[in-house]
Image (tube, rainbow, N blue to C red):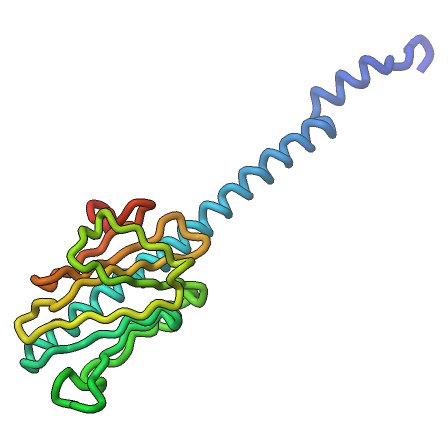
Amino acid sequence: LPGLRPMSRRRSKEVLLAGGFTLIELLITVSILGILAGLTLVSFARNWEDERLKAASRETSAWLDEVRQIAIQQSLPCRISVNGGTAELSLQPNPDNPSEFCAQNLKGSLALRTAISNNSDLQLCSTSLNGADPTGVALDCATQASSTTSVVFTPRGTASSDVLIKLQKPKASKPRCIAVLAPMGQIRSGKATETGCDFTTAF
């Protein structure tokens, strides 16, 4: 219209800023949201792996306790084989003398990689404690991935030997550990550390 001057570039820019975000501001906002989303996903994945590991630890402890009860009820020693290569626990009878130990059909094997969903990458290793304190025994599954150990529950519920079992997953925050302690046959669960097994924080 006559008498009106066109709006200056500076004035039009001020109006644009007042009415919305600039491209730079949008890019910064999207970048921050992307970083936060990534951190959330990583945390969620780690928590998921931790829960899978907890479930495997609980299942192992329960299975061991059931075998202990079977030994008491049957008045017969039950020998357990802990196989790190297959991540499996099973009853181990004596083929030459079936009456020496519990038969395999008294308790099915515990295959941890299939018993717990999404646990195909579970690693299990074990070692005989020989009277050592499990809180001071560090177990490296990388060097003992295919280790096989055994422990025997007596008809009184005691254990004739002791064993330390470690369970871990590559993306979990902390490995888990389970110890069967002789002579009482006590089953203890905890978190594995670089120096041993911490029984103060089982789950």
